Length: 110
Image (cartoon, rainbow, N blue to C red; front, side):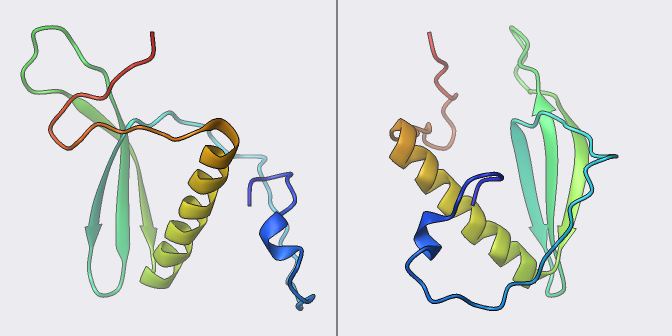
């Protein structure tokens, strides 16, 4: 579900006991990331986030990592499912998202 939108997939399900969660965004920071890397162990999944600023005539791109997010595997799976649902809703609303095959540069809009 996207913040502030109703979850239409759950409207036809019988009501379930839901836990209320308060979100405190008073110290939240927003960062841009166009790069991620993953690592894992039996106890955790780690997501590294950063930004790649492509420079002309540079063979090795430089990525500045800004954040590391560590999750228990069950929470990583919940995040994966939430991302799948969010991307599907985005594509349903705005059309398919095209991504370049591995090893090819991403296409940019004109």
